[in-house]
Image: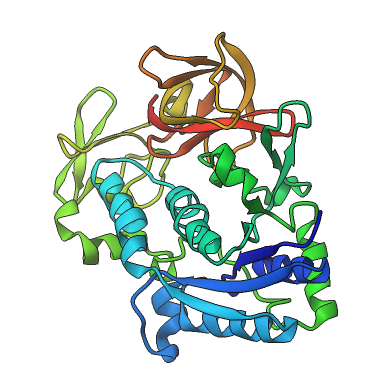
Length: 362
């Protein structure tokens, strides 16, 4: 590939640091950018106020990496847009009894949306990130394919399925062929300050992973008292808000039932939380909306796929069928546990990501 000007989204972590380093080493003109997505605070509270990739500490780490690599570095104020496109829908989903994936909108609307638009205005050919994913192009058709990372344990394609052909064509994922250990070793060889920085599994804008506390502060009206009932409708207890629960949750129910109970359904219209046994979590089908087929055209006939229903779920054999209203039905060969509305259902064939949708109902 000929040398390009590429904007690299730098979060202050090791993955995006190595992405920038690899592109620089390959001879590209690299510009480092951190999207500031949260109102600014003093550095002393950055690590707790922002989470791992939004705060002043992360900005300073990204700036030091850019300096070590000899590339220009900028911080872009995208707080208002992030609030509108990511945080507000996140809060709305919990208010409606769904469990959202905020990374979807951050990737499709900001990193490969707004940031990609700014990159084009700077005459950059692409935006690169530290995602564990790969892209290739089919020579015969010119179609871009999204492929799972070589390190399947770190694969992040389930956060990228909404990307369009145009976005994939302008995306670069430099670390997709590497394992996490190889990424860290590469950073150590270069002496980058992020080489051994721990990674966070939490939502970046939720302080200390406490999403309930975050929602209570931002949207206190989200939490309305209601009943906890069993699958036969018998009242077992009370709760202070459907937003505090997720499908499959076992702990924190506040019930003394003498056996393990799990959240099996959430009804925000009636403020009712339904609990049941582990077997009550099993479902063999779902309907997904906001569907995206990466190739562009949806399948005309039912298609055999491997479907994934949350980030840590092992893809399971299923049949995918497009519905008349544009949504998709996925029927699993075997029932799956804790299918949660609001989460992604992503469908694969071998290493290729065919597309995905947002689970609406089970």
